[in-house]
Length: 249
Image 1 (spheres, rainbow, N blue to C red):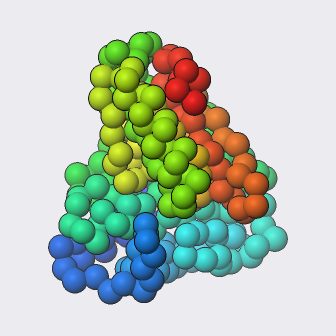
Image 2: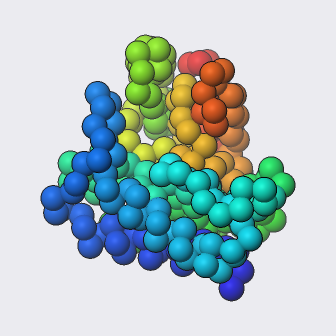
Image 3: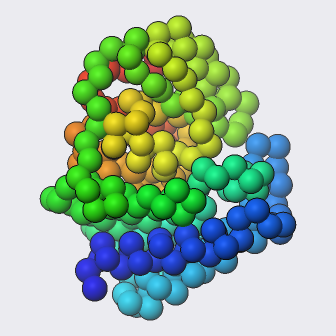
């Protein structure tokens, strides 16, 4: 089984678990003002870990719910077991499983699986970006007037202020704005032309690792800027590569 096939298998298996539990009472492990952690987050990551490291025991795994495996390995799986946990908890069917493989610091495999819609985006370095096995590409829309933009607002006061101001500026130019609650799905939507840009001032690596390779392979652009004082947190500007996104930053 190739790395891409393995990651896809893990994502589909975790997605089946999430679909089985969707709409039922979920155990909350931690609740903050702008976020929720579920016991199912950990259960999903444990399932993914067993599959990935069971097949690649020498690899490292870095996920939202912790690390596993050989942390000295140059092969690291980057996992978000439920991207869109708050959506899941409130019964909103917009969430996904995101898995990427980073080898010697470079993302080489990405999988984003939406278990509710039944869509799976896959990409391997040097190959095409695929949606359910069919090649996709970012849109060619070049003006804000015809574009749909996704602006995230983060979880702390500074990130909220930045996001809300960007949302205001962008809403004056764009055809429509969206706040969708899943960074990985937002990037997958850029890769297949449904959205034209995604901007957020602070996001975690596991949210965007698979999406970065997917967007870039589909012809879009992704700019990541490290957030000082926060390990593996990034400011992200992802787009189809055509619209003048710097005008709203």
